[in-house]
Length: 213
Image 1 (cartoon, rainbow, N blue to C red):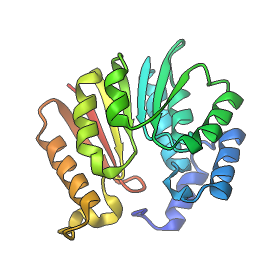
Image 2 (image 1 turned 90 degrees about the vertical axis):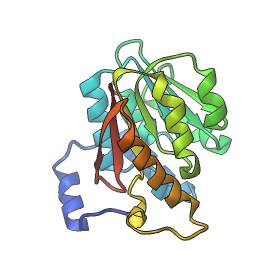
Image 3 (image 1 turned 135 degrees about the horizontal axis):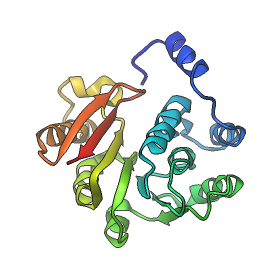
């Protein structure tokens, strides 16, 4: 859910740096072939991730939730020379698409894809990260945050997508609405966490930005 009207969104996209042709191709293929293309980062979110990565010049990035690779590509564009991005995807059927576009952009040596559940994969990656981007199953958001908080360098960033959850975070969730409950809990945990400074940016469905102290 976007929290500004479509005309404003269109204006923002028009006056933001445009994605390269290969990213546009990836977006078209995802919309044509994949069942839930809305899960892919769009132009504005991709531009935001690429800009953040270019500003921070990270050596190591962790992404939880590859999907078809759009956000991984945007983040990887800001990596330092010889930097690496580890991305985790639970659905092996998406790997062929993401890997195809990583190769097209000559990023296949910089992006390491892990297929499996992030709760199992993260402890196996022996690395400290400068940026972590979380955009996966919402029921495990609190666990993901706790797993990565000690794997981020001081001054590094944790970015978490969908923290406004189509506005559902404003209301008392239904008993079986585990996703909304989890996101509400995560937002409170981060607010109370002395290890980070944070803000929620109402971009698309809300992105939490945490700087590790």
